[in-house]
Length: 157
Length: 385
Image 1 (tube, rainbow over the protein chains, first blue to last red):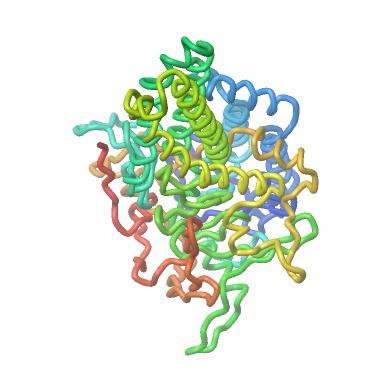
Image 2: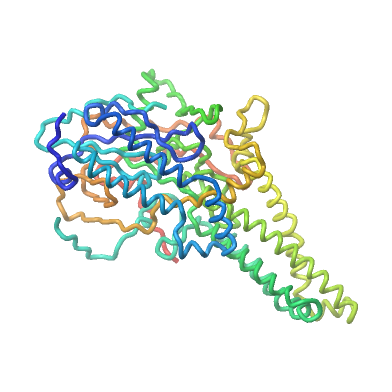
């Protein structure tokens, strides 16, 4: 459906929250942070499948980069241990740097892709890295919430 | 947007966190409620080392080498630093689900269960996931209203779900989980070394001094020695044993919790899907892995503007508005099904690994749509002391 929203500001002022969709974690690779790329049915009419999958895959790549166990993480770990972990008062850990990148990416995606379609992504870190929360907004003028009526369970196990 | 007038002091998010933790230094420090044993630990370590520095070190520095007290000081600083780091940091607490997320999960569960006949017990809430070709069961936490991630467990003492839950350690006054396990291990390792070091040099000191002045005179001159030897002797067995046990767990990439419950042992059980089957790789992952951030955001500021009639709903940014009606959806808010203890959860917990994964029915509260972040039944005012 065509949406009258053009940016985040408009969204906040003239829209009302209709529904929230939660993208669950994908544990098939273990405890690394990874989200399911399965397209939820509630978003069927709101956004193209490829755009959504791209967003989730990029986020997954960012998290994989943050949690990678390799040369850099060993170096960071050993150096930190030698300085009795006081070095973390001065420098940022690699994970924190990647989290900042993720936050910028989500903001950019919200502005360019999701807000024009009446959607808004919440950074997973604000939900304990358990879910990606996507808020679905309806134009205040339109009566009823069409996307709120579907209550089928979307994300599979 | 109209300016918000904050007429009282800033409220930080740690003040509204559910769970039974105590917070200090305006949210920077996070511990369990019972801290008595932690103070004992600190007292024993600082006390014993003070006696060592007072009685043994002057003699040994002169008669043997000045490197002895120097190394002791370094070791002591490392031990205390690791202890404080373990005790004061967030072990990896998973925040509870906000009402919308809890409702979403409830809807999914109901859809999966289909129609339950009246009077029949609904099936236990378990999700099966496949991890590295093994089936792992994820249990539902009735307190936090989430399906626990693999390896997470609910600590009944702190009343939180903790990621990669190892055990709740009263000696450090905190849970040991994903974020502070390596500090805990380094603490036990360095404490073992310190204990052995002090014990050994006590013996050396007594021997050397006895050669000069006789055994009884030595004890009279340095009465601290007796105390130190006693403390070290008893500490040695427990701490060295604990270090050995955790070294064994790390090499297999297991947690104390899994070991106690026997999750990966036994013929018909699942093999540990998290182990790399390589001792070095397992150690490296646990000890040199990335430093996970805390997802609690204890020091974030909460914006409470109950006077502003906001027409728009909560934006996805980090502001929390307490008056916004969040759930305007037409979907029926599923009544939260009263808890049923699954049989295995009723098992009493053993030893230090105390954890209870289901909450009791007395925590039932209707989900209030007006405050999206006040999930806890009661706002626990954490007194900073």
